[in-house]
Amino acid sequence: MQDVNELKLLLDSRIPLVVIETFEEKKALDVLSMVANNQGRDLHRWSVTDGLTRINFGPQLVPKGSELNQVEEALKHIKNQTQPGIYALCDIHPFLENQPNVVRLLKDIALNHFAMPHTLVFLSFQLRLPPELSRYSSSYTLALPSDDKIMEVIREEAKVWSDKHGGVRVKTDNLTLKKLMNNLQGLSVSDVRRLVRMAIWSDGELSEVDVHDINKAKFALLDMEGVMSFESNVKDFSQVGGLHNLKRWLITRRDAFISEDSKLDMPKGILLLGVQGGGKSLAAKAVAGLWGLALLRLDIGALYNKFHGETERNLREALKLADAMSPCVIWLDEIEKGMAQDGNDNGTSQRLLGTLLTWMAERRTKVFIVATSNDISKLPPELIRKGRLDEIFFVDLPDADVRKDIFIIHINKRNMLATEFDVNKLANATNGFSGSEIEQAIVAAMYTAAASGTKLTTEILLQEILNTSPLSVVMAEQIARLRLWAADRTIPA
Image (cartoon, rainbow, N blue to C red):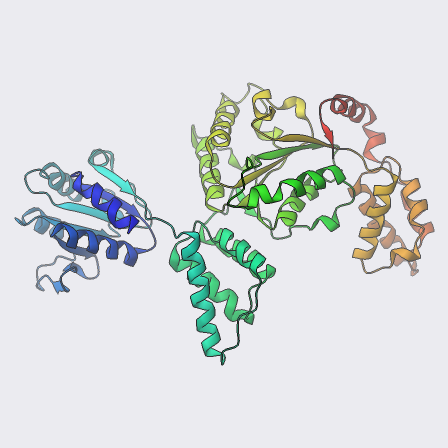
């Protein structure tokens, strides 16, 4: 009833043109029908295939031969009607471009509204009125389903499956259902029903795998490809060596972010600063894995466009779509590449920063920011101050214990047994190595062993380590300055 009441108020305010952008045309027509009945007005529907039809008091097609499937003829017919009515114009958007007669007829109807109060409702998945019409119009967005409605749809689809399979119940648990309900927010009832049905009918259960698949399908429905990408390979924190302080920080705030009834302030985000290859990107992925949320990666470089204003518009659209994916984690990788204030881009980076800061300050959706950076000195202070982000963590080169964990993880990952290697010796030999450099040493050693037709051993690994010059040696001065800066200004991850 929310849509009926709000749309009735809008029509009562004597707005001649109403724009409803939606994929749920049937739902919009049902709402309009209830509003029309309440107001005692006729509701007509126009489409290029069916022409003009009266639908709220039984379908009555306007007589054949009137050519009212032609938009211009239909508008002339509406303009000449002496009985006020509501006219739903379905998918009229292609006829608004380069057709001055159509635009003029619409304007005539709008200008004559107080003498003959017809209301034209534009129904389309996407529509932008010409400037000469927009001042007579108002937009309305259909309400999205509540948590209770989403759960009702899940139960309905589970019952349908159960009835078809002799009463066998759909396998799931309360935690998975809660995650599923959270991740289905922002979608229409029909989209929710379709995604839930696909998940249930694939194997008769709703599991963590289904939560991930539904997130991916939701991302596709929202058409977010481009500057934003959906990260399918979200790592679990068991795949990240070290970072104990960061893990502890995230665990203590997980419920405050996910829970609907938490009395604590919702966490906003973190900045991960550190040495290249130290595991910042892996940690960003692991945040989503730990919290069981979708991870969206925003490519800052892909935002830039040579035309004035397009870069900021790209960012606004990306952030709007992130809000639609809520609850989720948004990963701003190497953020300094897009927000650095170098003064050589005609103010684009400054405007981009302003757009991001405004969104960070005003957003009410559950979007957790994980920004990663290799050089914090290039970032403006207003972006990284407390209040914008919750904390800055420094991801340093791993110590001996963490290097040992990293060796175990990557050896086991490649279907070998870490117990067959002297991981303590390997950890001691890789002082100053980053996690990615350790992984690449293992990869290179496997190639060496394969070329000689032997099995990978500790000795082959040690020889490969000896041949490797880590970044901490190649760029020792820069890394030393970064560590010195971070010592008193950040929290060790």
